[in-house]
Amino acid sequence: MGDEQQSRLDAIQQGAENMRKLNLLSDTFASVTLEDKEACQYVIRKILGKEDIRIIEVKGQYRLLNLTAKDAILDAFAQDSTGRMINIEIQRRDTVDHARRTRYYGSMIDKSVLDKGAEHDELPDVYIIYISETDLWHVGETVYPVKKTLGNSGIPYDDGKKCSVRQCGG
Image (cartoon, rainbow, N blue to C red; front, top):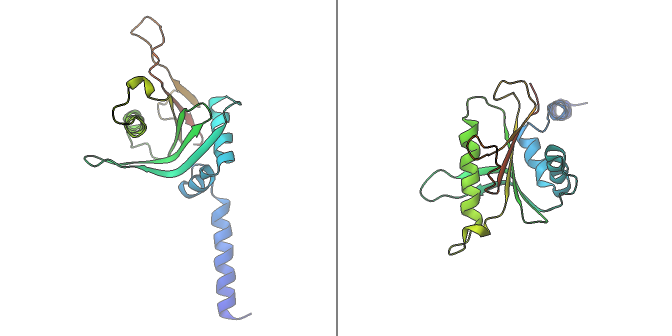
């Protein structure tokens, strides 16, 4: 075997070894996987615990443009058969202000789906699924459903935006 053939074989073996290390927290792997409608639907169903969700469209690495401020690039942006919008974000770093990041992405989604002149009640429900490699709030949970209530009353406050944070590593 010549040096050129050996070099190619070594490169292929190195590529295969690198691929074995990929998982859903790997940006490249997640981008490719979540662009597949069935794979994205499977992940959403498992995380939300709702087996009846049917995804009709998904876009990976979807950019929400903002002319006057920071853009948002969503890891996966999907719509289900009921009209709900579902954003999946994967974050490996602990240095990000995760709560504000989900707030900003949610506001960018709202801005992008409400047509000019439309009424606010036309905003679809938005689910934000935030997958982290580590326990962001250091409380020892693997899933943190974010719930909104009116003050100390315990009365649910439903503005159509749901958020769930899931630890998938570390």
